[in-house]
Image 1: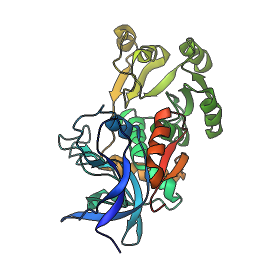
Image 2: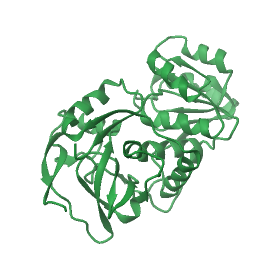
Image 3: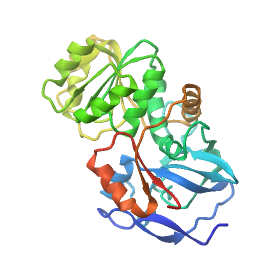
Length: 327
């Protein structure tokens, strides 16, 4: 039974974590479905929106791009990338991400187009399934659709600890790549070794590029989400004809990048955002085939939503932060 009001984390102003309140329950229109959510995961996108560092912010809004729930008794997950369009190479002008402008998954119910619904991988828990969609989609596209990762190649994934980087790490390992990582935390580097990575460095140490070079020799694929001044060191770590996939820019503008190595070594810098509907289907096939499980760092009840946001903002997590609905 569904009620006219539901519990939701609602963002009403810049700089204040979304607060739990009763909010009107959504009504599906033609072509849409109503999902009763069991769990939802946070993303750094949600943090940027709260801090006012994202275009097109409106108030009030229910954030959340990741969710797992029930649709007429069927366990489902949601593809959060809306209206990709017909061109596999790039998203359409109508493309949007669930959780802004449309209300998202940090609530008892969410309304989405029926075509965004997929069966939950049966080997995943409720929390793992909620953690998969955005991170899995983003990681799959940048690794395979954009960078064309092949078995046996050597891969560097920077800033491991976040959901996308960890998912990329797991996928690259499953694909038969030799994986190295970087992190700003020695503790995270120690923990991620259990996944099977070949080595890692702390990027807060000044000689991290030299240490990686000595450790690995060079990379066929580098996956980065930071940009900033540290990006200029990445081409020097590349083998000839290597690919650098960039899916974020948390450290801002790229400075100090020399073109000589780019053109002489035939390097490729490939931007990547989310993924197409085809990417999502292929990602699910890959996850099911390899029985991959997203790493979940902490689970909070929806009533502790502000605490969950604050925890993610501290950057201590290794994996996803998940909110349980009905708790």
